[in-house]
Image (cartoon, rainbow, N blue to C red; front, side):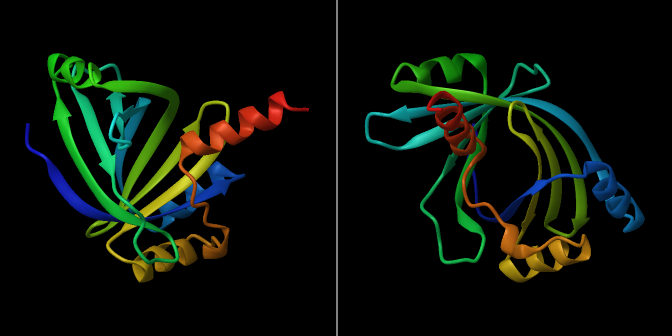
Length: 173
């Protein structure tokens, strides 16, 4: 179990015309990396730290992710630690955790440049989004502008937080 650490800088924007966005990405010649179906489960530990377990396309491997506190940025920038867990390792970790909830998404991934990833996410019960991940704010902005997107439309909340808001809105009418 090798823990990979990095600083993640990403922008998330709601997308209303996924087909046009795919055409723009294709025209730019960015490398298609694949399509995955994900189940993301959110947990909390007694010390207050939260983490995510992600299962991709029903694989046996589980991706553990912990994200740290936000760093100064116009986008979402924070330390991220990830590693693959076996089902047995995940089971041991979950003995000390509280289940918070889950969300599912279908993700189409493209490599835009070195260390720059563009993901088109179809989030169940939430809609379509683009996530642009790059080493710094400037590269994220450059990619957004290349795609004709407004950096001001960036959403800072996680998909899980957006789903919670939607649920509360739908059930408090």
